[in-house]
Image 1: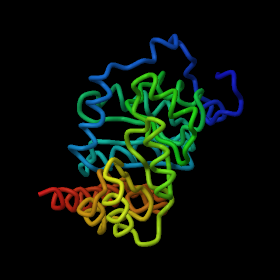
Image 2: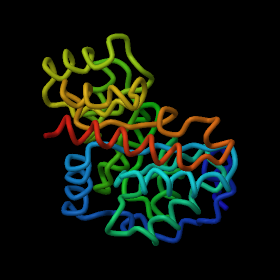
Image 3: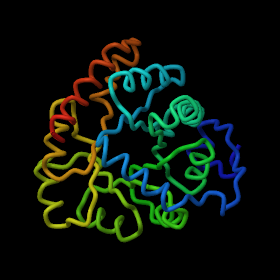
Image 4: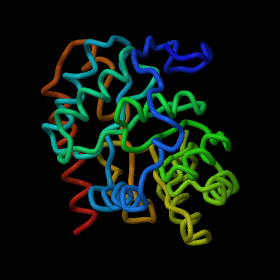
Length: 243
């Protein structure tokens, strides 16, 4: 169990202790580049949070069966780090597995101990971004304004998550990416099965799919076929936008 009881990973009942030295957390520049190239190639990430641990694996399996090749488990899901570890072992080299809702450095270390390839946060936490930048770890912090996104970029975040949804949707992304071309925007709120391609065609580097991909009623009812069909639909729209 982690020393800091305040961390999400600790409250989540994580079995992963910090077994690495600080130097051992450092990834190579090549690894850092490969993560970014994977986002650039596939352009869409399945982002899952479930109220029960047992719902998590089959829901994400359905998204993968529907075509997702980048997935994110959030620390607000019970057993999140077990899912990260298990899916990393099962799909290593085939599906890139990341961890979200990383709120402090202890969370970041726990996620990396579990095998996460990238980290995501709903907000910009400068010390987490700095720590990740020092260790060649891809961190995608949440931002809502152009100023926040630019500050994240300056702090060392190579991708900036747009969260929550902004007025104007993909047109906001178009305007911001035109004015600030150094940014790499990843909207994950306001993106649905039908408009994912619109975001990509208007300046988003990649997108994240949350509730539209994993409807709460489908998760509760164990309707994994619905999730797989949702995944196939959005991946089809993403590929069409990239063509």
